[in-house]
Length: 273
Image (cartoon, rainbow, N blue to C red; front, side, top):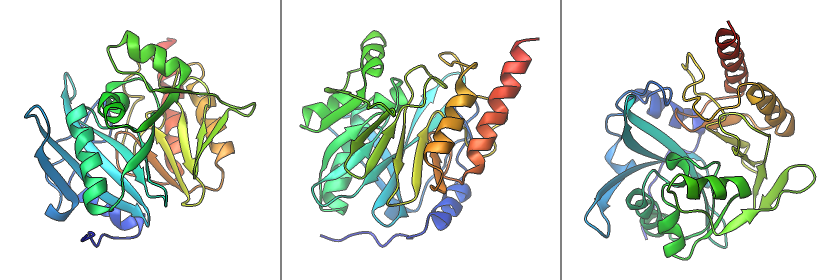
């Protein structure tokens, strides 16, 4: 099976994403344009819905997946997740927005990586993170989310994960090479993050604001009193991880943690006036 020859360093991947003009936040997202053809999987899935997902190698063995959905009043909203290669099957961190897009991720993993997604973990119960759980469960993928994420998913019309994560005393759960960590409430009450120590990557999801963000983004379900402390807890737990991946912008460094803390505190101060 032919495998794409992609850049192996995240900085080159970051440059590519900046070039295609990805938006910086859920609250204000630009049209992402089109990526290079060999990074893109486009096709039709059962039901006739057209899905489009873009893939980019972040570091060897870890791939970004990027999907979009039009969400008013913000327009075309990008959402990132990860595909992590393993000997016994790939790990998916967050689904795409829809079942159709998530089916594209499964097909791409089989066609390009010559593997299959066997496990998936979701970082909170919003559609950009759990919109494709139904497709994953239908395909026999083992799915994991926090207990409160599964409860909230049902309330919000999303399919819950099959397994509720049982966090240990330190707020951690191990899933192969991934360290799933519960830092407490922030963007949502149920948000969690995923560290990949072997790869030097922290997937912060929607807890972490992207480069260029000027506010805290969508705070409808946020805990502004604790969000900054949650990010501080993440920074302490994953002190050595230098590549930080937010949900709604390209990967960056640990400066995104400091940015998020600042924006949350500014938002809290403004709201208290």
